[in-house]
Image (tube, rainbow, N blue to C red; front, side, top):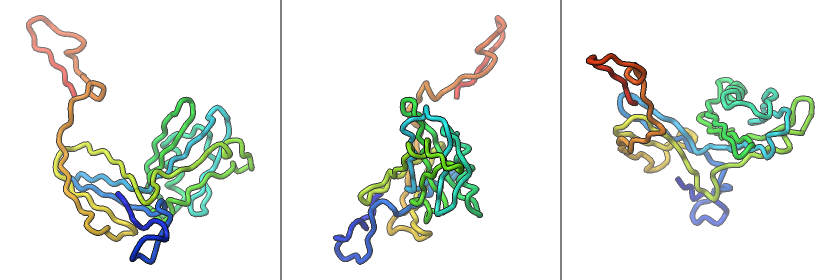
Length: 208
């Protein structure tokens, strides 16, 4: 998804931004009430040396979190961000490893006016051993805002994009989702028929 409101040279548009601070909420409404929400408001928190033990804090819109360990889990970070505001901030956090170093991808699903203010702060005791080696980067740049989503049900979906609760012009799309190619790594087999059986009697198991 692209937003041309980037820089001061855009013709016929009096307002402009830096091409990476806007936020777009994306909703996909599918079969039987199945709904997926995501957004372009994604920040990546990257540690350059996860062998250094200690704590750091997050700051969002001026609100400071409690101390977080250098190897904080995705679930703990998600809850910590959520409780900074009332009503809670809705976010999704994924933690990955790049070599031996941790990275957390934070996707904001609410409070989108605050997402670009995410920053790293020293621990509450002032120690900067961990905070000094953590950076925050955005996936969007130059007016282009990538959005990622995963749908787990096949069928027809209506996709809509909003910014600050206003629907983006001509942003309602219809998407058809079909069964993908079977992948052995994402399949599993369960049942007693995999472990034992009796001659002459039917055995069974399930593959999903």
